[in-house]
Length: 161
Image (tube, rainbow, N blue to C red; front, side):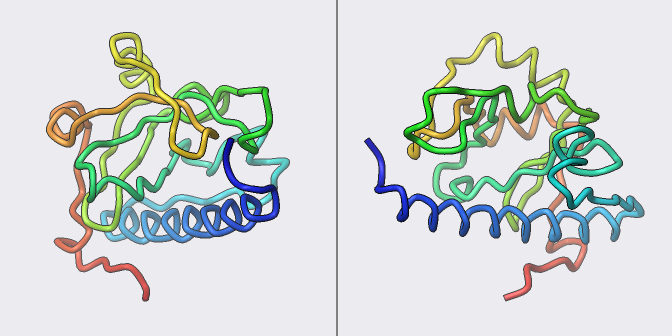
């Protein structure tokens, strides 16, 4: 099941960097709208407090443009061969109260409580790498459920290439 360990480690490192770049992208977008966030960089603070002081969980959905669906994570594990799942995303026990997810074209802002409630009526599935579990919202459902939808290009925010 899955890729050999070294291949997965390289894949995971690339995905971590993509996620960090997306967090920076969203930070720029929010700043353009008058919302400044202060990220926690150390593992100690991220594990104890959350991703940032504001309580915003920020996730990059790399398949959104292709599938037109949003994947809301509820559990994760560090490696496909690991048997142990931990709560993550909307069920992570930290200071998070907003869940921000999207890509470079569209960004959805949800209340974590709202998504926790929605998870009860959706089928929980595993992602293709067998490292995440969650549920799928259509783009239309995500748009109607979200507290706010940002279109970064409308604010003049573009990814750095």
